[in-house]
Image 1 (cartoon, rainbow, N blue to C red):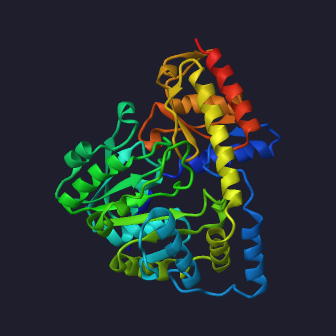
Image 2 (cartoon, rainbow, N blue to C red):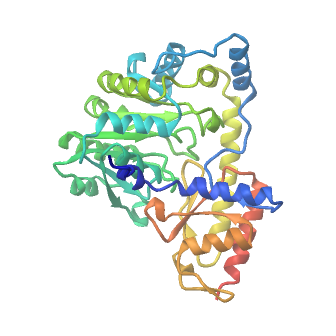
Image 3 (cartoon, rainbow, N blue to C red):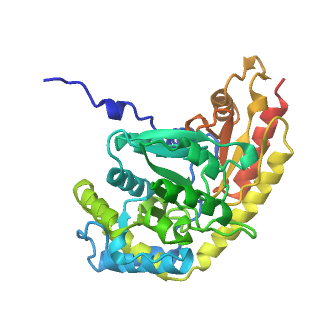
Length: 399
């Protein structure tokens, strides 16, 4: 009998964003005044009405197993939200509720992929996409976008990347890490390619409520029956409702795919957390005032961070339109000297920032762009100001 461990699991990289966040917490525990631009986690508390619904669920004894794919009352709330916000008709038998967005994506790729199937992922990408695809037995195919394209996949580039092994393409709008948003025109062009080549779209819309200015979020599945039939729409409550730890994600898809995902989930996790599901119903059906307050604060932080970075030496960015990240080009930092140390990578820059300036940033090699870094503005404006002051001091000391 062989004691060799799984090659598939061994090939998976740990999450660098979670590692950086853990390092920042460790330093804070040592008494260091660390500014963390790392994890995409709102600094707001979960709104009180949502917390109250969870407490009521506990007092009412709603602490047992639920149906594997989620409770019917939460599915009804999600179905209504899909219709009102996304202009999508997903019945309750087309919805699967899971333990967060990552779990939803795991369900999706498990349902779609056979060994060797290819999934096209535009870079820069959220670092978990390729790893989840690999765990499902698929092959990530990375298509690198450019600044001139606003880091968005074009229909032409998608067409070129498709092979006879292509099963799906991932479209993430608003995007993590760039904050870019696909327009209706861009999505229609992509939808035409998808339908013509008969592949699936995995539409990750986790940041759909965090869109700024005159921009609007468009769900690709809303652009016609043919693309609707080929799309699995994925979202959740973590970012919009400050519910990261509650772990509620959900998908809308065809009945066939939803049934498969529900069956898989029934063996992997039994069901999503019962109490969190009651809280999620209140989040979707209850007052939305707190969501608007958080949105306005994120927008204020976005503008401040963008304007500050544009004035700094050696780095640049394009204005984010959604989510809560700024994608920073630090290519000019490479080769510079910081005191007696040569900066030979963005990872080295990040090490210096956290160890000498008590500032945690995310190098984006694992996001497909090794000379970029990601800064989250899901922290207070005071923390942002302090952290940017430290980054600017670091840059001014380079030679």
